[in-house]
Length: 150
Image (cartoon, rainbow, N blue to C red):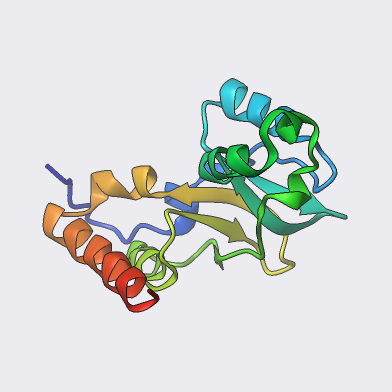
């Protein structure tokens, strides 16, 4: 059952602060070791101090068919999801849920005013604070938009 906080939760309250990162030049194997060591399924990709993408376990899984045995040595930049979808540290839980649905994603980077990475918010971070009905509505938006894109 979801708890209902008496104060407004923000991205800062919900995020995993200072996530491990890699560069576009890191190997896929290095990123996978971060997945393992940090017990996560996504690693923000940072170049010259700025987030340029994100590598997810799904990106790696889908790349196996194309790259096979060469995948571990491949640069992360070759298979990462380019660009970023972010929220500000003071964005509310409601804004975060809306952005998950609008962008059809499960993770958001939290960026400060200078576009520096502060943290990452995932569905798992949000779920304890959201009713089952709200989660169902957000998921149905993602499914509807995915169906429209076919």
